[in-house]
Length: 453
Image (cartoon, rainbow, N blue to C red; front, side):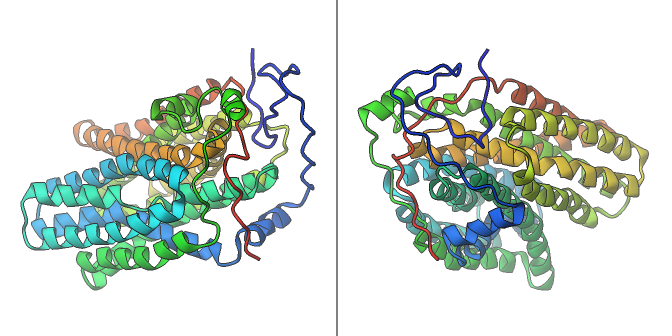
């Protein structure tokens, strides 16, 4: 039986899947110096430049504002919650389709070229959606504009991860720290983004909230595109590299999906957990007569996740990817059951405590899934792989929210809290299926992104 190595140890081209010598022996890479956790995180601004972290964080903020902003905008301007929900779903579908397309193009022609086109198109799409919703355009026009907003949403989070993969080659511990930081940045963004939408919509209007998101995208999205870490597209790998990878690194979408299918399914299950939990919490707070506070209660999960995502780098190298995935997913299952019990009890304090515990296991699972996805994909297809994972999460959120809403309406709030536990079980199952060792890929196919001191 083959096994999956920890992402802390890069795959070796002179070792076969079962660990036996084979192929052409190469000199081992020098071992990465062992540093403390804080020192490892201190490497990140040194590698990417001090400006990269705030630019990449602010550039991803509009992405977290799109779904809730679209829902609020369309519902408020048209008076139809149903149309608002459809518009939000259209934006999610657009993201699911446009994300991997952006990633694939970035792999071929470089992130900068793709982002310099996508960012202006996203701004125009947001303006078109605001105009369509505010002027009472036909439902089809509104839904089409919402889909374009999602499709052209810059994939900052996944593309930032691709840059870290390039910058931390042969530094697996630093890469793990980068993935932990990115997951934390995502979590904070998905707490801060909806909060900003709510504040701006209350003080001014939903239109102002969406236009603010477009302005942030224009400024920081372009700054992210122009940052020196934006790598050129990967050249076609050599025949030897293709043979080692088992397929052309610029091969088909289906071929790449086959390689990263397990982390894609894992991210789909994670999205289902997010979407169903958010819907169940909303239903709980509606029953309590405080539906407007649902976002604040749900944010408890995000804060716990943000903290533990940073702590993953402190785990020992012997605690491999499969073990981490299964162990933390099992923790998610247990705490999701606690959330189910708390949701049925009607106690807000119990629910907040259960969500806090649930969040502690989310971050490590997210970091592990993204790290495994990067490990399984050819270096020259990192952009497609990372955006594929992010899109799977978006689809999972939409699916979980949709099913959770139907269960909450048809059966009750307590039953809706059972869905996150089901999603957590699916995460355990996908983690257990992670058995085969990733084939070595040509890590020289993707030029290293230059650091900026």
